Figure 1 (cartoon, rainbow, N blue to C red):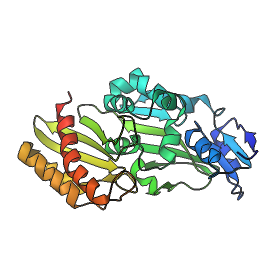
Figure 2 (figure 1 turned 90 degrees about the horizontal axis):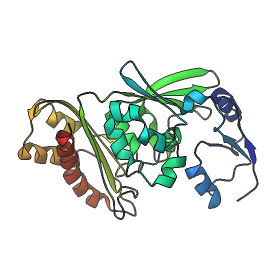
Figure 3 (figure 1 turned 90 degrees about the vertical axis):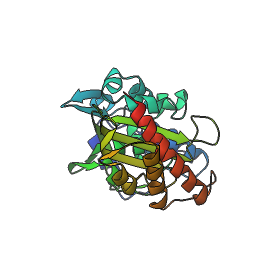
Figure 4 (figure 1 turned 180 degrees about the vertical axis):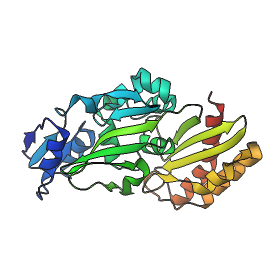
Length: 285
């Protein structure tokens, strides 16, 4: 690992200003999981590393306001998992975190870093998108808010400006919506997913009034399956309908292959797991 200067700004705005220079050797670190791994293998060689550990305390807090869950970007994944507010307002998030990496990673990794890394194999982005989450960002000129699904531009790419940082994530309360996140892994349950599927349903009994289905790991960015959502909307669900939803999902999305499986293999997984995720969501109280 090459030598570097560690800088610890006291505010998120100050950190953004430090990034505003055109020095490409300046890198940012929140929890440091991905950054340290890339530095160790030589993929990233910063001369200046900006740590966010000392920024305002409010970015490490979770709150419940106006029927929305507010989560600062520096909240660790383990704090999110254990939060009584999260368990009350969006229990599906707490359930999902149980198999996100391992305890050691969750104790260090932050929500903001998890989202900003933009690896399509991450577990939270598809679920938060399905729940309707937004992100608020900070830059030297001010702030802006955008839907989380608009954050991703491609594999490891976001729509953030070079000097723009995630400050907070806002998630509408799950309320009476039924939600589930399922992932298929080739090894342990907490491994990188071959496919991740999030399903959030607004139901009246067994009638689905509205549906949001998002997949990850099989696509460059978390992707909503609009065709499958349309099949579900205003329908009475039975086994036949679930099969139709799976077919719609598998036929209407472009998939990528990787070392965990070919695109053709993942298409079969989409066909099966979308139907399973919908069924799992319906089984939740």
